[in-house]
Image (cartoon, rainbow, N blue to C red):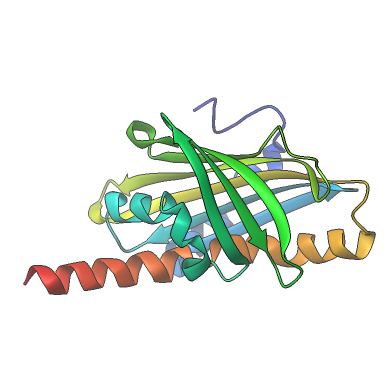
Length: 193
């Protein structure tokens, strides 16, 4: 849909080649990214062997992110108002603070995130994106997940840290979901027996 293909997102990242589609089918994951100076875009598509509601529950459990995502060292949920949730995350070994506003949209299977506009922007001038979860049409206990992000590092961020983020952060931000959701689904099935 148009929301997924926003105008500020490079088209070459959105479209998958036949090789990338094959990789997604065989390996369950495709990651693409582009960078221009201190701005970067990333797209990850993941197949998860767990129902949509299990995957979505993981994505909106913000308080537990530090136990799920290795790059997040601490999470504090400040307040929730309707579908908006304000959080502060401490990320990486440097404990950089990233104040974030999430929008939880259950009917769309979407969790969005944006840097809190009230933040100082010492780490990131701008960052936004989303997780989108859909059931696999052919298998209701499998989900297809899209993660898309745009980030613009602060001018105060040293180039070496921007380079590090470009190389490492996209994978670290997404690699946790598949094993975590699949393990949670396995445990839920065991307790139902």
